[in-house]
Image 1 (spheres, rainbow, N blue to C red):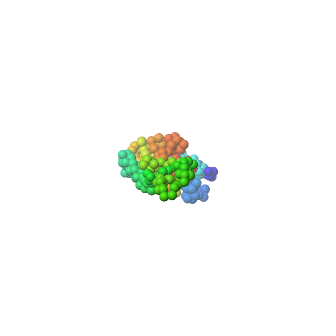
Image 2: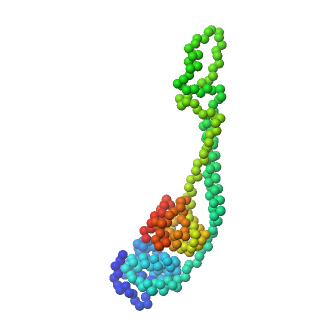
Image 3: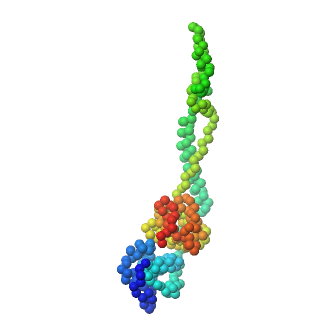
Length: 283
């Protein structure tokens, strides 16, 4: 954090954004450098300095951004002045997105699993059919350890002109008797693999949400309600902030995620790794 080098009270009538901008310029910092320190988009920092807080996001996010900005530059903002400016900030308009009914989602999952089972059966059945033993009923299978009938016949001499007796073909086996080819064999289908659907957010109540890309660009900021669903492909999300974490069900890489380790005062903040696992955000 930069130590303050001027009076933190500020000039009379000076807005919060002007004080932050002057403090940054006196510290010799550019917006890009400060953005890297605070892990905040440059557009959000510029909106704070211009007092355009409606463009910066919802009041709950703006208050935290102002606190982080002021703490980094060593500026003490007047809480009454901040509350006064936040009081005139209108909530952002709700963005309408298509809602996928639950029965349709379950139907699509069932179809995908049925396809995996059918493909597995198509591949496994021909292989099993080609490798199963086709033994004739006339072939006698005996163990190499005991062949008494052959030994006894080989020991007795054969008279001239006598007809040779018919012998049953013998198949030697080291592993003992093999199962009959007529016995059916069960082919258990393989379990369908887990489908990576990326990040899925399901809302059971009203909650603020901010979703950012891996490069820090804000993808979406909105107030969502019960029944809303958000889906983001794998690798497209770098960080998420949920205002009412208890009203949101999070699934990543096809698995449900417990937000207990990422929530504080019912606000969850987490980042996503390349493999879909969650980790705590640095900010």
